[in-house]
Image (cartoon, rainbow, N blue to C red; front, side, top):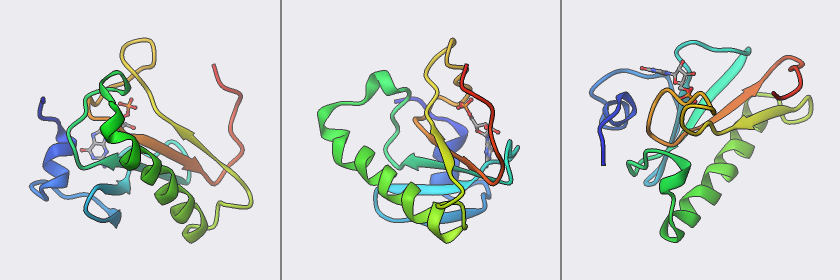
Length: 113
Ligand code: 5GP
């Protein structure tokens, strides 16, 4: 599997503002936040895109949603609402090829498109 900047964040070789970590998942603040609350929730396993997710990753993927829910509550956007986005490949505008879920909140967002 390919190395990305997120692999280095997982190994703590480069700094990140980490808001959650356990054995399988990490979450940290996006370096260029698009909303007042903008976290990236990632599996520790190097998985380049959603296309590479297999059945054996299902538990970790589900856990990422549990972490998202927990972070939304902790950071006070659970009631106002938020968006969870996973970009894939060119048309999805994926830039970092390590699967990640954006948690975006803290302001009213536009429609998808
Ligand atoms: P994508 O377009 O791949 O879904 O989003 C990648 C996200 O990673 C972008 O929102 C970008 O700002 C963020 N990002 C890229 N490099 C770094 C980094 O080194 N540290 C952090 N915290 N975020 C990064």
